[in-house]
Amino acid sequence: MSTKNNHVMAFTNLEYLRNITESDPKSMREIILLFMEQIPELIKNMKMDLNDKNYIQLGKDAHKAKSSVMVMGMDELGQELKGLQLDTVYGTGKEDYVNHVKRFEEQCNRAIEELERELEFLKELN
Image (cartoon, rainbow, N blue to C red; front, side):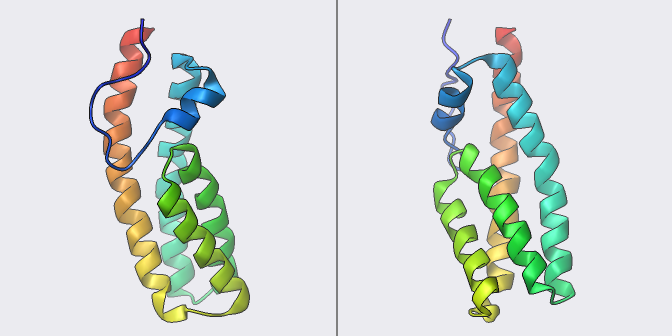
């Protein structure tokens, strides 16, 4: 039985996740659920960091977020978060921090919608 869902995923690419889990549906579900649990907290924290102008913490949160999105194949967003992290270290690009966080939130919310469909598919395999 195939562990690859045929629905179109515009924000995520689960090939890396399939590789690291050897396409085990239970392992894939656990990692997806962890992502879905962590992302809202990261969004909240990053918005708070912006509001408080705590840019060092924003960079740390961007680093955590980068790892999470990369596992879900969101490579472009991962690179953007890496750039945000470096900008916070060097104190550059402050005028773009808000837009980076906004894109992170928007793309992750759309990714979660895709992943909810993937979870339904994976549930059928168990």
